[in-house]
Image (cartoon, rainbow, N blue to C red; front, side):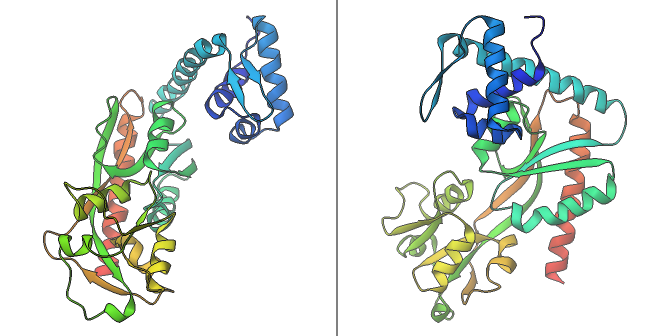
Length: 303
């Protein structure tokens, strides 16, 4: 196997993760035939198949199942060697792959990117938006360098750095503007609109509305905060949104906003990275910059 290449390992890792040649090729930014040819070459080199090719799905063979975790370990080690070199050369430069959850990315990421580009002109930013579990998977397997998520995460091997807290705001139909502010029990009795499963913000909202009970029965789901707010504008129900999303999502929606009674529901946003990442000190510096951006954004809204 002396001619085995990193490219073949990366392509195989993508195929093992996606179980589909097209999605794996898209992930690797290559054509499907190019990826397929590299996988064939790898199998020829090994003298045994790594995947079973079906009409719609790819399955790993027994060898492929054993091969996949070892390939991930190799790729992780190579990525961290690169990070080790970068850690010795001073300020951040080169590729930085940062993930952000969907309930933060549209409202905060533009300011973060602007600040990072101004501070580190040699940085090649590669932002990615995904739900928390996907970001954790990518972070653990070195497909991301850091991620901005809601804390706590409490995952072994993952460092956490709190950045800021923000409250949740109740969004109601416009004709309910003068109605009393509901308690958690009162909110549970309303038709509540929440994000679909997989979004951590859904779990945080449910923790306030039904901390020790099943989810409200009269509940509807949406795929984004924009969808939820527009549904409220149409009079379908009420929803909770994080404070940073309010200016964007209510700009074109006829809704009423209310602050809930104390103690108000809130979330803590933080940055996470692998503890084994040699760029740990740079990640903390990066987190401090992101925290400063958040404070400046909050101060501008309060002014």
